[in-house]
Length: 219
Image (cartoon, rainbow, N blue to C red):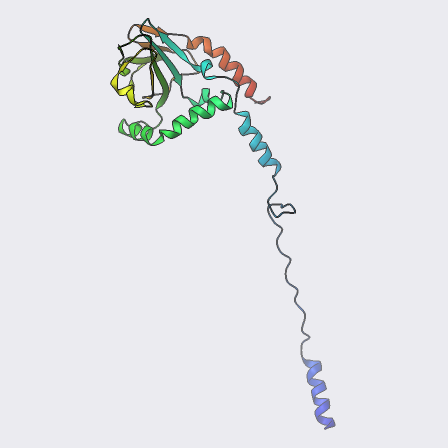
């Protein structure tokens, strides 16, 4: 019996000692969380949000509109170019962006049909000064950078636009597609039949001042 006890003691001394393994520490979280378990806003997120808000300007639609007038008809021409949209006040900017988004599919389809990847978009409104005024959408042209541009397509926003005839004080609108963007950073001319407007040159100082105001110092 004593021999058996000694043998067991010897075997226990020769066996390797087991070591307790503790679990590895969990990796640090990549995003901090508040006491409710929701992620907190980082400095970079706050800066990005502030930059996005800074793209809103203070201009109104009238500041980026051109008007052609006759005794019968008034035409309003509003370029939907990103270079001017980002200078508008929030309400005006969101209204025009919402208008573009609402016709996104039609714009894309018409652009593909004409082989355009980045067409120039313009909001055009015709307003009648008397009864029975007729208008031709295709007569609205622009000249800029020595190029003459006719509309390649029109997307009506009001049903009676296609009738091409207006009653007194009636107005209809459409989004025009041109094969190139209106050159909003320089002068261009808009024409309809015998009517012409070169007033965009007067808009440039207003746009430049607002763009400078929105541009962070040092950039």
